[in-house]
Image 1 (cartoon, helix red, strand yellow):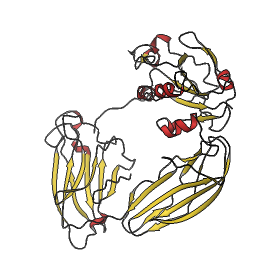
Image 2 (cartoon, one colour):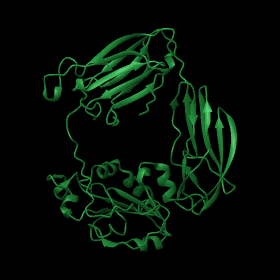
Image 3 (tube, rainbow, N blue to C red):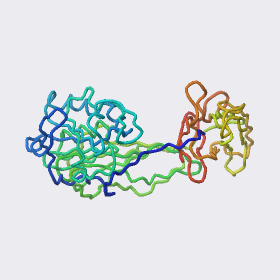
Image 4 (cartoon, rainbow, N blue to C red):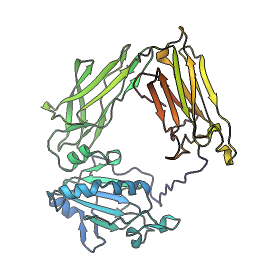
Length: 416
């Protein structure tokens, strides 16, 4: 494990610790300013003209802000829906750190502090307005960077948060196509189990239509057997809620599918977010011998592992030697694939083997580069890859248990 402290500049800059503007509420005040080119900005005027407004509040030193900027989401939206496209939206980026001089918006700088650092030219290829002002942070409830809002013409606000890379949410939020439009914002996911699997998830949904909703009809399908469900739930525009389906238990591999059928008795138009699917796998692996390949990173002594069976018996385990470098880095065991042959007797349920990896330092297996093998663990049965867990970065728990996973054929499932 790489021995370093990653300094995260979580700078609150005197902001209150309240959350951002709550989705589904109204923008309470106007933003009037001049952008970097001297153009007048008046958010209320845009809204009154029927435009949906996007506000991206960033800081020049903020890594996640730069990643989102470089991804080009806003550039593409502006091209498609802005003045040069269908002319339905307006986008404004606001550099919200009061310490940032304007010149840092135009060029990369590594000054060592937030006030002297910029990750690049934030104006390159940008055709929407950029404002350099912290005077709107209170109005916009800016607690951290980046913060992104979508504001409909009636001033209803959606805080994009985890949706910022979701094209379906962007499209429906900016240009609504239905009065009643509900989409899933969570998934079921795939899971494995030994004796029994349990589905008790409460999927989350968000109202991206133009009016409030009160009744949701869904279909819960378990291996193709459908159960219609009616949920009475009031959700205003841009508000989210949970759907509950009780607890379902399985003893065999099972597919669970939840589909939005109708909203307030209006048939839901199918799209990528109107249905979620999850699989609960009971692994089927028959073997008397298994090969474990474990690849270390640069600090091998910090990692150990053991393979246990359904009776908690240890079938195999390994520790690794320190190297001569600082903190035990390097040496014969570092960045090396170690191979182990494991015998399985008749009393072992091979479907329920558990690999437990322990990290003494607590930072995950991160100390490697593209010139050395990727750290992780793989399992083979007669040269068939049963399961692999590579690049185990930053998933160490407080109790030092890095990964526990059931082994299954041709599947990779990870639970921490």
